Image (cartoon, rainbow, N blue to C red; front, side):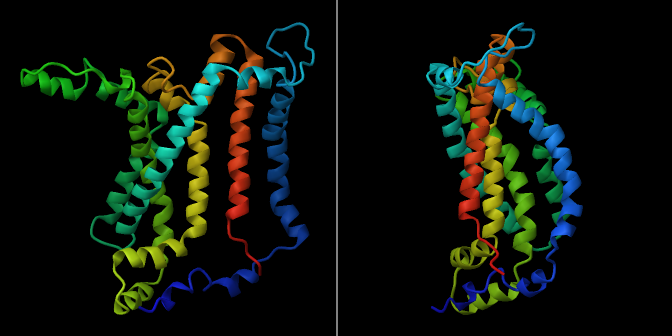
Amino acid sequence: MRIAWSRNSGNSHAGSARGLKLSGRQQLALFGPLAALLSIWLLGPALAGLLATFTNYAPGRPTIHLVGLANYVAVLTDPGFLTSARNVAIFTAVAVPAELVLGFVLAYLLRRPFRGRSALRIALLVPWLVSPIANGVMWHFLFNRSTGPLNFALGWLGLPEQASPLGQRGLSLATAILVEVWRMAPFVTFLLVPGLAAIPEERSEQAMLDGANWAQRIAHIALPSIQPLLLAVTLLLVGAALGTFDGILVLTGGGPGSETTTPALFSYRAAFEADNWPIGTTAGWLIMAAVLLVGLVYLKVAPRDES
């Protein structure tokens, strides 16, 4: 079977893109104000927080002195933090691929116009548009043993109540992952639909004439055409998963025990509940380091424009 139709993805606008290059002065004029604003309001506090991780700083503490790497050693040897790191690793490894697959499938089905497509796209965005806290409250109510619809239906049928999966070991983390996939997969769909819709229909028709089935068309046409976009979306999802906090806080509170505790929740509890600001700040910066590492991997594997 000929697959020549799979080799020409993403290059149709290369010539026009070359004419959009900006000079050094134009780039400075365009991005300089934004860089200055970010430096003052984002990078400044971030760097101050980083410096604080090497001290015993805490609000209201009269004296501050350097402690070197003691805070990092304390966090990285804390069983609670190690458990939270394991939890978020599982959370990310399961949730992100599921969100990508489900989001891609929905985007592929929505790539061509049909009656009611716009309304469906808006409806699919609702789970993502609602805040993680509101989502957590809603799902906590639905899974609650006394207020959830499942036990209401079981009681109506005269059957015994079932415990909420949010409070059961072995099920709470899986349930939190399902809720996160439900919330983020539509966001992936929203980002991928324009890229899939931009693929010329003629390429798919040519592939069909060459005998390619739907799986081959996806593998040789759709995925290569949106590869840069797919990588960027993956980066966003991994970064969001590593920093998971508010939804988990409302949904499970980190329980049962520490089964759904994430590093962000560990950092929050250390700083605001245990009043151990050095440990909380250090844990937060370890999360930042993980996100930066993901960004470096993205820069390494992302395709480069060599024109």
